[in-house]
Image (cartoon, rainbow, N blue to C red; front, side, top):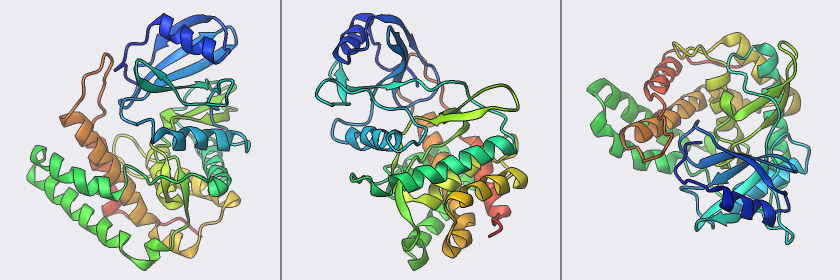
Amino acid sequence: MAVFTEVTRAQAQALASHLSLGLVQELRGISAGIENTNYFLTTERGEYVLTVFERLTFEQLPFYLRLMQHLAQRAVLVPEPQADAQGEILHSIGGKPAAVVNKLRGGHQLAPDLFHCQQVGAQLARMHLAGQDFPLSQPNLRGLPWWTETVPVVLPFLNASQAELISTELAFQQQLAASASYADLPRGPIHADLFRDNVMFEGLPGREKLSGFFDFYFAGVDSWLFDLAVSLNDWCIDLASGALDEARASAFVAAYEKERPLSGAEHRLLPAMLRAAALRFWISRLWDFHLPRDAALLKPHDPGHFERVLRARVAAPWHAMP
């Protein structure tokens, strides 16, 4: 992610030694993203990612790190946090919380086809099922209460058409969240940010295999359907227009349902959840764009992308075939 906190080689070595990872061979800042400070950390033992958390607290972080550990121990393809001799996986650098996880192999697939979407859909369902017995609980911190709180903050930056859209959609989602059908949706820990750049594949072109999901630091307990909608809105769209690619979306959902079939209520509410997922990321990108924080390598995302996605989901609701 963006570099907000400069980590020295000496600090990295101290943490690596504490975790028995050997001598540090390379420490390199990662420029993508806007939430935390991340470095690629190479030691005698292997390749890792060192994260210094800029917003999440020592009290919040056990949920994320223990979830990753829980999933990794159940054969879900995610990075596993590195523990010290006492089994602790939450550490500190410069007074800020920090963690080290193993680096996934391969690279991103930024132009996914049906084969990539099927793999991600299946692994997402396995992740949901594997998290059912996770003992910790924390709400999705970027869920409806955050939307309700943040929309008034970003409204002054919007034109009349944008302000009407965001206000109308927020009201729609508030009404939906108060309904009995919404309350009945299956829930559990979700990734909540499973975009193309948070998934890795390895192998020859055309035969890549999914090697893992990472960046769980937006995870929380929410409806599994919302997690599916977030993924569909990135993996299965035309990036230029925001329109859904029905072939990829159908393949993604079909692969998901082979592992965990959707309920009738989930099928009915999927169009609304696709709108909710678009709203969530439009709000957060507006916030990051208009109210940015200082960072050495900060590159805020264009909020206009998810405005287009939301307008497309409202204009053309999509239903997966049951």
